[in-house]
Length: 262
Image 1 (cartoon, rainbow, N blue to C red):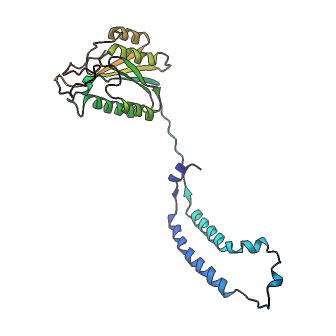
Image 2: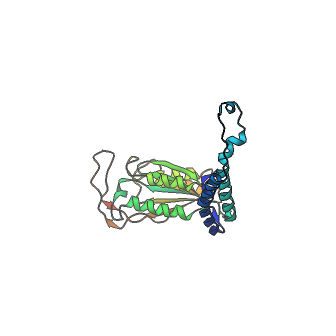
């Protein structure tokens, strides 16, 4: 039986459970009554009775008091009227498929937002996912290259796990906005949803990648994908952690102006 079912059980008349306090009285009465009315026969020898077969009634007689107590407890529970309910909710969906494209370049570790830009972007994305309960959402990450972190899914629990797992350094450093957008559009290419949306969260301008952002935008228009961008960070200089000793990591000590809507 499903254990979750027991968590939802309630009792209409829980006061009947006070009757369970009578169980010790029943036990005392059974023991004392058995001793009072127990008969005895004196014989000279039991040798002749050893081979007499014992019926199943005699063997199970000691269980009768326990069975009576169990039956009484079951009756009390029935009087308390255990109840459970199944609720259903109809949700009208607009049929929207969404892909979140998140920049994970080194500059996303700048600390003008707390604790840094990347964590702030992840928190904003988590809040957005929680607010879109009826939409399918996917996740694409990009820096110097792009990668599909989570395909479009209605399982928002899995999506949020993948969202929390992203970190800077997972891909080659850089800001390939065009590739991030192209990969996001590709996730929506075969979608049958009424509306298809890509939301890009980035803090920089395109400086690398094989696909130019304007080319990726034309691809999005061809597949009727709406593109929105969110600038992450503040205007001006921002503190960043020390440069990573690996050659693939290049920290940026500046932040550009927030990107305008594509």
